[in-house]
Length: 514
Image 1 (cartoon, helix red, strand yellow):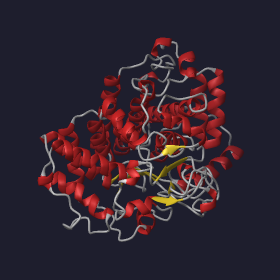
Image 2 (tube, rainbow, N blue to C red):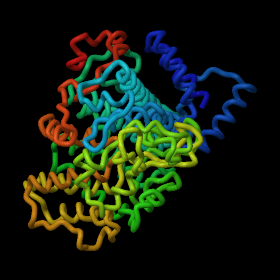
Image 3 (spheres, rainbow, N blue to C red):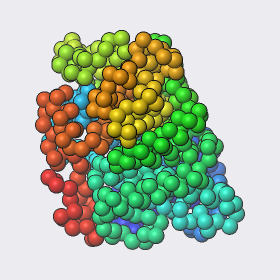
Image 4 (cartoon, one colour):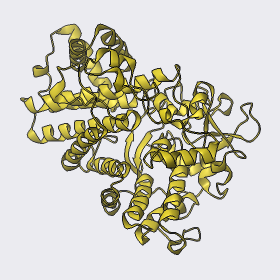
């Protein structure tokens, strides 16, 4: 652990200005324990501290990436920023949840629900997201560059860990390109170059696809620990990338590979409470639905921060209180108002609570942890890819590829819909949608609506709408909220610090409106 820390600080100081080095140093020490696999890392940290006291020595790149355990520790460091308090499982996810058609932002997040772009309060939050994604990329690049040079590590392990690092690098770039557009591509060949031009969206996606294809080939079917990337996670990411790029046949086929593997299945439920106890609650270690989640633990600085944004302190659904930064209304929000009361998700995901806006106000309870001791200590895992996502993605992609719904597409949709009503997901039921009732347009709209119900508070809805293009996104948001989405709201601003210190960027590289 000390080796990673010293190495990161030395390289970051070499490649970045003093102000950024100081910021990174403070952040690194703050978050250095936020690594994926808690017990092994804590043990490693203790032994490293003892070694520093007894046998101080310098750590260089060529003396660190020599064993499988050292390389695995370096890969673990690339996970840390994805789980960070201000990352997608926390503050950045809260930004995206203020952009949805089913809820509204409150407090400092209220302005985001006006869909007119970011203000001075929210820009620093997305700036922090940019920094965290590029730290993930940098940590992954160190593994990709140095693992092959190890002297006491097998080729099998090198191939596996490089593939895992490329998966994480692709994941970070996928988030960057969807939220900022074209961004600077930094790979292992540019670790000594601080000034990198802004690449096009197509160039970023080319890198993402190349990395994910290598990860798909070289990652194992099952990770050594729950939460590590696998070939199935790579296939899920490939399916989503193709989906986002409107390559529907490719997206369909990748999702279908996951479905036909029989490695995953929906978790059956019969009551609203079971969505918590069996799927989203802090006590769920893993399930048959989990393709790839960011794993959290009920410990300060190591839990899901996003859960804190959902709740009111009086509800006692979060042990540390709650920000109730998002809310909805059962009478004025059409998504909620038109939602069938018999759908168990409606009760499972929302609860009534008057926050001063009337008795019809509701708050999201999808991620609740009454025993969370701190704001960033909820034990709920963050679902990146779960089987319900794959089924719904397959349903829409298959329909779009065939210019109309297929029997397989309808069955995939119906599995999710049945489970929502407490039915056996794989057995035909009286709540099934019928293929003959839908054409290409109405079926795609139906799946989009179902995705909107199923993935609430998972930081997915805005990006799901964006892939459909600005006109469709604006239409959906207008219908639900009455608000017009400004063009500048579609992308976040490139941080001023990046524009100031990266001399390969010009002021014209800033996203429009900022």
